[in-house]
Length: 393
Image (cartoon, rainbow, N blue to C red):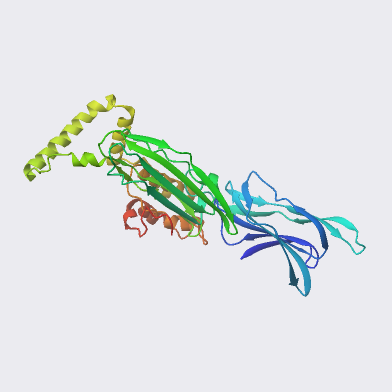
């Protein structure tokens, strides 16, 4: 289905703007636009410049096409230009007007200028449902390659980690910045990132490559935490997450040189656990102020994970009571982002029903059950069918 707006009469020279109908795009989503001209005049020269705007990014997807077609028994010269428009803001997006400047030849073989204009068109753009830089794509794939087994490195060996993201229907500047892989026990060097875009007839395909050279400072093993990348799936009309997985890290010699593989009896082990917990709780209050900043941050992160107090959950419930679905979506994203930051389970489909109500083809809050939506976000993430590492549906 397309929305057609025509300049000129049906049997003369006219220019159309063709836009997709039936979907309300979100900020950053690709909108395919086709300029189609139908001309009966003899054209000697032509020029057409698509107008830029502060409200959108755009690019041309292919070369201009010229061909003859039979329309209502007449041979018409047809012109087409295929473009992609990416809105930068929510609200009403205006595109055009667009003028095709022609030089035509009349019956006396004399040349004359002729301007054919397609009028301005407007469509509604919804807010991006997530936080941070809007990233909307038809598909987003992630590939994580390693030069060696990260948990069994040779002494002094450096691991090369290469992460490749490929987004179909997204511009390069919409993909996120390179995450920082930094731990107190790790020496890391990041190579310059690579961002490349390939225009195709269906839209741009952007490839982003990150590369790190990693080496542990000591032989003691550690774990690099996962990195979650949120993006809006323009096919299913819902938010998804692509996850760079966690990485166990260390030298193989550390495992080989460990001693004392025997186990204590269960009673002695239980007493040891109790003593250790008491010692940790007692020592925390004494040692936190004196820790180095990084170690103190790591310890506080662990305590936040164990804490039953979650301010984002209270804001989520408050937003549900307000009745504003966009406020509820922002509160849900803040709640889920906190869980991802703390390494807690997030499936990626908690907000599916809410996204369908906001951005689906039958968007509207009449049939959306806010209480059930909040329960799905808070209490049912582990029951969803799609795992949090799902990067492509």
